[in-house]
Length: 277
Ligand SMILES: Nc1nc2c(ncn2[C@@H]2O[C@H](COP(=O)(O)OP(=O)(O)OP(=O)(O)O)[C@@H](O)[C@H]2O)c(=O)[nH]1
Ligand SMILES: [Mg+2]
Image (cartoon, rainbow, N blue to C red; front, side, top):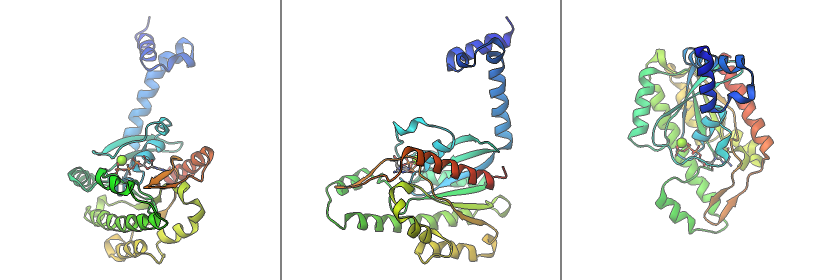
């Protein structure tokens, strides 16, 4: 038996993908095709970094963009380390870097790596105040709360954090040497399903010409001559249809699963447009 056939069969036995292709040639060709795609992906992929405060949905976004359908059943905990994953798109490959949201050492180390290597683009994730609390003592305090103003107050606090996080992120992007600075920043309001009925207001809030503290930070950044060439875009996305619980208040998802996957497909198309695909 040819070596590649034995390898093909062994591969299929371990990974469990060979059987459905059927036939000797399909099984023997498969590992090489995979290897070829992986090598080509690594060589041509555009590096895109996902930034944003904790709990906005960076990790779910990264996984969904890379085709992981299983996370609906096991949503990630707060990220501790920088994670990389390759997106094999229809038109191009994207090397996605998921930077941990917590302002800890790991985040600083991730940004230092980013500064050294540079990147093609940045996806800056935000969630219109619907970030999930990650700190366990804060979670415990909030879980006791109720009242008609709770959600508004919670979101107000999260939106202030979002602006602080944007400021920190833009400062770090500015520190990247000119040649390695990103060509574009895609502001990505995630969790669109939680505020689909307020999408217009959210779009105004995040637009470069908007009348919000977030827009003000963006304009400050754009006003600096060294940053004027960086393009800004805003594309929203929904990656999962989980309700969000804040104390005694439950914010339901307004999307069906079909809408979720369509929003991801649209987002993926735009991402590939910007990666030269
Ligand atoms: N409804 C809804 N919930 C979402 C969406 N994306 C993420 N979530 C929720 O937000 C939680 C946090 O998502 P993560 O992807 O882990 O957040 P993260 O930004 O990686 O957070 P850190 O790793 O702590 O920086 C998830 O467990 C989901 O419950 C979305 O599009 N819609
Ligand atoms: Mg994460």
